[in-house]
Image (cartoon, rainbow, N blue to C red; front, side, top):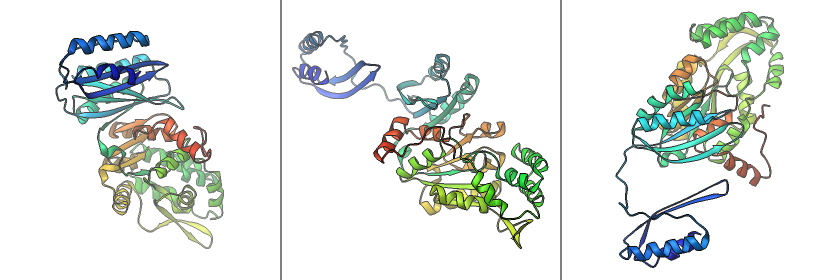
Length: 385
């Protein structure tokens, strides 16, 4: 069809200025912008005749070859477990209210969540983000706004929190169960994650409760850890794209080092439990990885990888991740506390960690195709071990 229509248009002295094609559920929409025609009536007649032969509906209009310049171009990614027409209408309506235009809409995924990406022009990304964030929250969808451009697919560094982000649950609570102080530790953890208690002090209080635990129990904790659904897919795909991946944790190197080795991560930073005579002393050794320490680790990783901070992505769920999320080019609140969701650039409110890939412009189809090319390495979207 493309060949036949352009062959008909070739009867005039034309140049192709723009061309776009979309196929949706077996229906084709094909558009050309052609400039320089002098025998306009001849070209129109030829196009209508060829369309009739092909059984196509056609519309030919004259106008300006190039639309007026529209400043500001953004990618708006919308995620939802169940994406409703009302949600899409609400987002589109708010974009229209700003005087912006949706130039293109592409589906990024249909499982385990539905993800669509809108290319928007006519308003600056920061203005668009400020307007759409409350709209998305009221509609019950996750939304991210990022500037368009070549840098979106440039080399990136992705750094994740560990507890309740990369893995399911809190490691210190798993250790506390074996030390017989789970209730006391959980109470302090909850207060710290809500931002009601200084993280460093909360960590010291919790670690002190672990004094006397046989260090061999940590191996039992390691073997019982479950990854967040989609974690391996996220990391595998990022590594294929030559991105660097790291973890920062207020947890412990006795757990995170083995986790990083298993997943093939590039960077890791965590606290270290003090061990004496095969038992935990209730203390820590080395520099403390707290809220500020996580941000410093992100800076250190980025410098080593040669990646600008604007090209980094940070993912976390708790108050101690706030500095890291603010420093990164894109801060993602993953199933996070309200204080974190409000502060982050975007939030993901379902359990699938690989949904972060859609925010980076990587579709589910691309992920599955890469897995198939590597010999069927794909794992289900609900992977968690």
